[in-house]
Amino acid sequence: MTYWVSIQTAILFFPVLAFLITLPYMIREYHKYGCVYWYRTFLVYSFIFYLLVAYFLVILPLPSMEEVANLKTPQANLVPFSFLADFFMKGSFRLFDLSTYFTAMKETYFYVPVYNLILTIPFGIYLRYYFNFSFKKTVFATFALSLFFELTQLSGLYFIYPRGYRLFDVDDLILNTCGGMIGYGFGSFLLKILPDREAIDETAFRLGKKVSMLRRMVLFFLDFLFFLVFSICINMIWPWNSSFWVSLVLYYVLCPYLFHGFTIGGKIVNVKIISTKKKHLSLWSIFLRQFLLFLFYFGVPIGCYGILLFFWSWHVLFLFLLVTFFLFLYYLFLFFFTKKRKQNIYEIMSHTRFLSTIQFSKKDESMLS
View 1: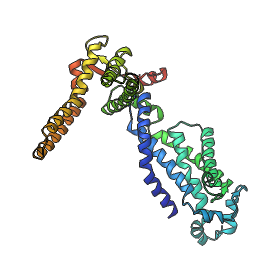
View 2 (view 1 turned 90 degrees about the horizontal axis):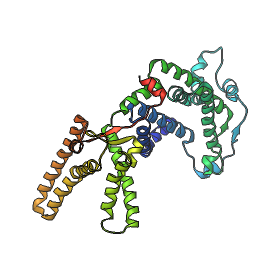
View 3 (view 1 turned 180 degrees about the horizontal axis):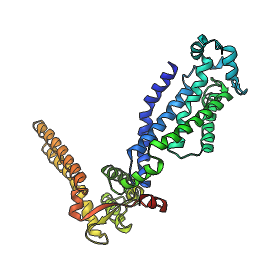
View 4 (view 1 turned 90 degrees about the vertical axis):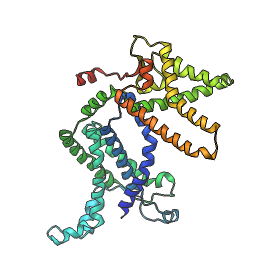
């Protein structure tokens, strides 16, 4: 029951953690591979979920401060393999009595060491299969993880409690490390039946040659954040009413012109603007592209709602809902148009498009050839 509570807690915390790391993870993937590949994402997020479950299994349930303060039990066991002595001498297991086997398996002397062994088997699997760790690195990393768990318990959850509320046990270090070693063996087996890290990277690089809709949205979000910072700085230097429009032109038009099609966000996710007609991107093409972009995506809804607000009354509420539905269909059309044509309307009209600038190393190029 205690183990299930820890897993439930991890399930509750995981969406929050996933929300916090998703944008940094996507930016990192787009910068390195040009693609957020679903298989890699599944591996990374499942690994994070596993670590979260393992951590809560170690620290939960949390006792009260008063209960910990009154504890008189030892805080550490430094005698290795004492779990074997406990199992054979304190438990009900008898080697030549088969009737004791099942009973012994239900005792803490058996299932606690087994739990500590199983706890880090997934860790060893991930290290070998996805992270390409050697056997020595896997053993060291698993020992380090186990030591972190044990010190967390010994320190009373980083000195929040007056003393450790669980035993620092050298046997746990041994069993956890052995679990990582077993996991390493399973990881080697998975490499024979599942795509290895090079195959995952190869697929990601191939997908990264295209600028997906999600990549466009991440780029737009990044550029919008950098534009806000840039416009605030401009407004501090030039506190006029026109400072917003000046910063808009400087960031979205002059910046990509001076930096060969790159905005700051584009440099991060490796996407730049190029001309589909000319060798070099002209200032007019960039201006026309950005003007049409803001017109189609912001000008149309602002204009529609602006007219309604100007003539607003309770009698036009139905018309307001109708315009909202129309705008929903309008954006849906723009989305599927871009998805099908691989270019947006404003790109076609301005004779520009996005280009993925993912750079491959010599190793990557030989792998993709």
